Image 1 (tube, rainbow, N blue to C red):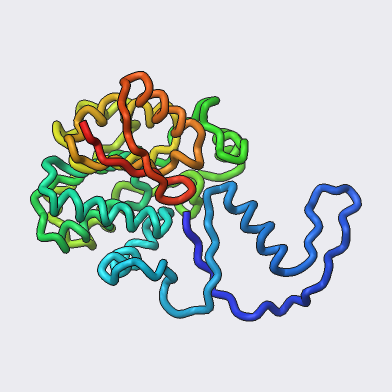
Image 2 (cartoon, one colour):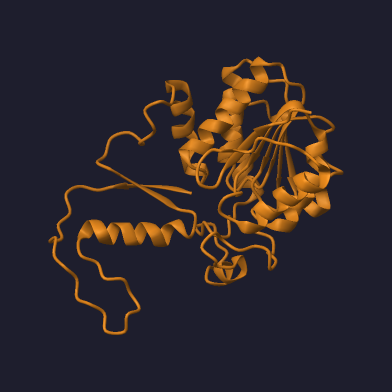
Amino acid sequence: MFVELDVGTSPFPQRPAERQEDGQFPRVESVSALTAVVRGWLRRLGVEVVRYRGGQYPLPADFDSDAADVIRKVRAYTMTSPERLYSRIQAVRYVSAASIPGDIVECGVWRGGSMMAAALTLIECNDSSRQLFLFDTFEGMSPPTEHDVAIDGQSASSLLDTHKKTESDAVWCYATLEQVRDAMAGTGYGPDKVKYVRGKVEDTIPGQAPPKIALLRLDTDWYESTRHELEHLFPRLVRGGVLIVDDYGHWKGARKAVDEYLRTKGIHLLLNRIDYTGRIAVKAE
């Protein structure tokens, strides 16, 4: 998740905070130190905070203008970081330019922002023949298991227990099918090419998945769903196709699913780091 904060000069004095008697909170010596503490807490939820002083949505300077435009268009529909969105855009450009056959599949779509970026990029590439498959419950996160623990040690079940499943809550990732369909329609990509598959992936895959996949993005977070997706969809990812795993770094269950699958199948894959949690690879064989 990526959050921008529009802030100016802090109105708070740079002075030491009172020491806590019970030792439950860290001592904060300045506003900058407080900012670091808050960022640390938010990072446990997968939230990255960026400071800027107004103007356009801040993006790394090396992003090309077309990609930057796409990212700004979809940012309200995704929690994906700019780096992961840029990798998504570059992956779509690659499969289009290299004529990698197959469709684009995404498991776990939330509001549709990542697939919107793919659709907009396909239009940019004059490649509108591919079908886009969006697999999601469209009812929020499915139940996690004991394998699903965040990088900081917090279990997914305890995290979900502290949040209500509402459209405004980013933890449950709840968005309706109608909301996602409306968002995708705004890209201008042919609606007949966009396939929405509702339900748990364990129930809908492989039956409703395409036979050939050029780009596969996995973002269901949990161990069981990620392992199921890999078992049934990675064999359909064509040679030269791209695999993106959104939560390899943040959720231990997702990492376990990927590592187990590759090890048991004897697959050697250069799973490259996008940011602290995202990973990307090209299928070589």
